[in-house]
Image (cartoon, rainbow, N blue to C red; front, top):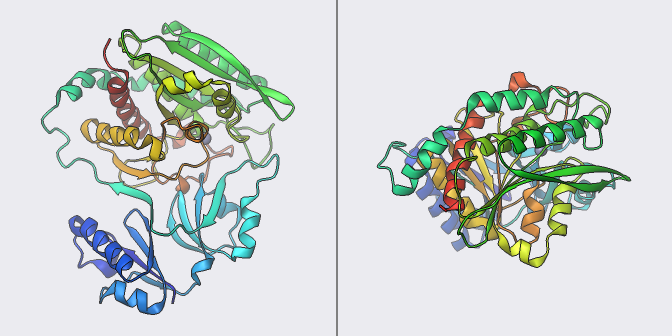
Length: 429
Ligand SMILES: [Zn+2]
């Protein structure tokens, strides 16, 4: 035996631990593992403890684990995947812990390399790394016990704008996007979709421009819309999503409605533009729809590479939306994914979710494979907002990612959280 798995808060074997007590129990177990010289890795309310048998025994101290895992520690690997793409590509790899986007799998370390190396045209849909020791992979937070608790001044100021997020306009925009046969980055339909979005944003009073992005010998585009702030510190707040879709199963010419991935995020950018069109912020509001995300973050990498030092310094925060409309969990859940540099943004988003929505919030500081990553790589505070347990969504990148699977309620809640945060981040003119 080399690992113990504790599922605090949900496993029958731990029914003696009340849900409310789970965080304390987790803290106690984590401390016990550290004290015993064992290593721990936490995924939400699941704690994996690895070490020698005596260390594990000392950690457990009489507590019954949910599972005793008989796999050498060196074989334990963490997978971060989009959709269920790792499991679909590698059904032969045993999954020891399945938390949707995050998996712990049993893999020969000598073979792990073949899962890591992306080939030139390969769409990187998952990442594999040795199980990180003494690390929180993601954190789960409960919704506020009393959502209608005393409104703070900030909350009261944001509420009318939060309430103004239009479900009908979001649904209509999403329908328009999902009705394109494909929005493959290099297709004519992508250009038509981009032109349409540009018209919408201009109509809402934003100045727009496009940016050409070289992609595999061809090209795609980014669309950038801006409204200057008034009287602020010269900073800018960015809201981003990728406009392109892909059918990675049947090829570039195959239908790719991309309703959730990422019609939902792109329509979300338009919904935020609508909600904030008349809101005078102190900071600039910049909305970006990227191309080339599905080929490997080409649009966002290009955008960040074009920014000079000053332009990077001016970016106060980036809120990226990628897949916000598939309900994969019993409770409506959002995952906020950032890095140390964006921890403050992440905390403010979590607070906005608590104050203005009924969302359960998961947080992770292991950024992966969406347009927030190039910003983070450049030291710019960026956070991905994505539906919880997106790893349970096995329709993405296929012809099956259609409107009928979209949950507008979840998307609206994520949009309300983002608008509440943005009102605060933009400041008042
Ligand atoms: Zn996506």
